[in-house]
Length: 164
Length: 140
Image (tube, rainbow over all chains, first blue to last red; front, side, top):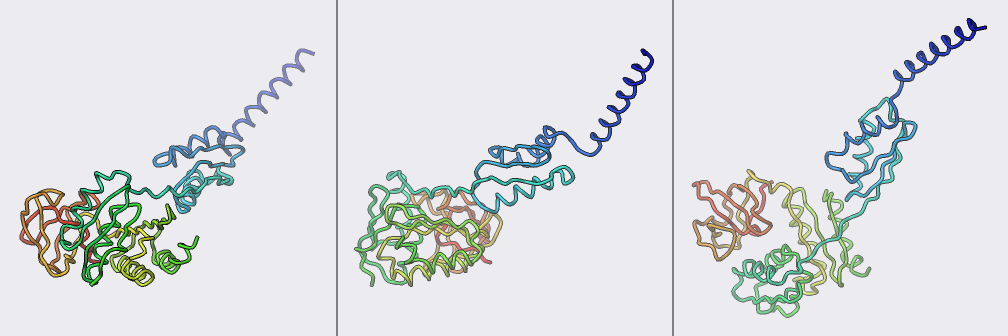
């Protein structure tokens, strides 16, 4: 009776070792895969979270462009082509809001620089809005507008500017 | 949404011209547009379209800032003043002393971008200082 038991347990042990060896060869654990994927994408995207289950990687978080979203998915697949079965890409593309100038003091000094070469023009700043008055030859209107827009005001009001 | 309709041709052209980072958003009845064009020609084309839709920019319902991706350190830029020389200054600001001048259409080297308004440049004669970025255009 004891002998049979011994044989059975020995057999079970051999089987277990064999199974472990096989499984170890064919795939890595989800935890290891998650670590591997995270390492591959974390350089620039520490805010993207990675989940791994049975070789399926789920990505979540937000990025600024769709290109980034697609590149991340590709990077995940490339991280371990053999063990990443598929990628569930739940990343949300969120375009950041465009920022406009809210600091009038800063804007005034920049407007002074921008309008230095336009002596016939006067520019006032209030609450992030640049109001242009005076007169200017038509050929230079675009140059002025480009220079003022580059300062990111809320608005450039040139309705009172006389174009010659 | 009316602003998006009014400037649809402008936005469509921007999208079709390789401005990958194009951003636009209506804020307080003004359409704010930002992006980086692959070269100066495309930037100029967009400004021409904007000027056609809103002659002389009198409506004031758009604020557009298009950067040019080729405007990086070490590249050549052209002086695009109306007809005068471009001042080269000791520091970034019109209150800084003038240390040199660059002629209209002269090609100079962009050394670095101190900020969006002022770029550090070097002329062929080795004069180095800051110029107002609006008067410099990357040579593509």
